[in-house]
Length: 515
Image 1: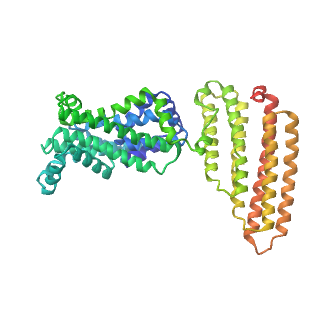
Image 2: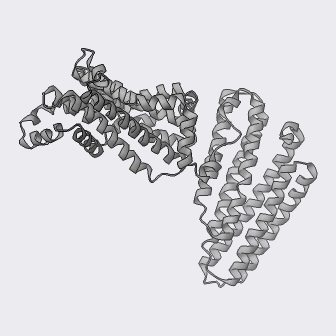
Image 3: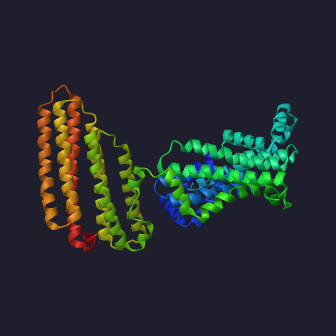
């Protein structure tokens, strides 16, 4: 599984990730896409955490993630259906072909594809071996004693399945193991079905524990996967008890009605397991999302980093897309004031820095994909917006550096005065810049242009004055003063460049000015 996942990661690029996001816009397409992913990885929790990574990176929304997380469980059931058929020859053939491709072909992409084929074949062959390894255990006294205990009660079978799955962190080996036991006539069909339910209980507990370290919508999606497992376990266990003790034909009767062998029948039981939660989520995704977001809401970091204006559908109209990018740039610039607030209070800037970087990365990706989809259209304006985005990204680095440097200053009355002057002076100038960005008139921009030039000279004077008052042997203090004033001077330089850029666009683009 590691070999498969590593080489799949190499093959995935930005455009494929964007395609995945578009597929997720339709909940049924997203469900089908993750069904395939579940079949490949053989682990619905693994696909769930991949989905969480996509969610945290902004590729998909939490609403898109819910049906995606459901599809992986169906994919595991489908591949289990295939595995229960004798595919030894197919697995060995895949190992051979994959090995030849890895060792003989050196062209880009072929080695990764060969390694993926080798990983899939090795995974399937390993599952076949796990299934066949159950029969020899029948001769072991300790194993017979354990089976005797688990067969006394369906509830004990549920607990055993949960414990085994919690230990091995995978459903398919445990189910294949149970099928082997049933084939050796060591347990009945009802016990194997309860092993399946217990396996999902164990997986749900594992995901619940792992998700406890996450925050925001990432934790929300992890909790959704865990609790939808618990929901299905409760429903299906009740149905199994009704079927066994009240003799009402339900799940076991349905899967054993087809004369296809025990293995495929249990694979059908895996597929049917997720049906209760699947029906609820696909029928009412908004209600489901609201329910879980009430208990595990999005973090403030996620709210800041989530784009509010740009979206993939806007790329069909270049001018509209550039207008939206302009609005998103104005929004991210407004977030930079928070760096100065944190410098005043001495708070760490890590979360804010991550949010700003994520939003700037999303704008970069949007502008890059816009150029690829519409080459030659509004190229001059697109280049101007792209150049501005580079300035905005560099400006973010300088703003984040100011509180980081100031946090290193020792307690000193003179340094407190230096810190207050740096923060308040920068904040006052930046607020004037933001006001000009909001009003977007020529007089405001002219005033800002003059102000930024004056501020750079002022910062040079502050640096010289504080360095002259610092003892020569205090190298740490000298370094912090130089680095801080350099960062602020760079801020004013970049703001001056952005002022010229926004002023030129204001003259050329009435639509942007109106926005």
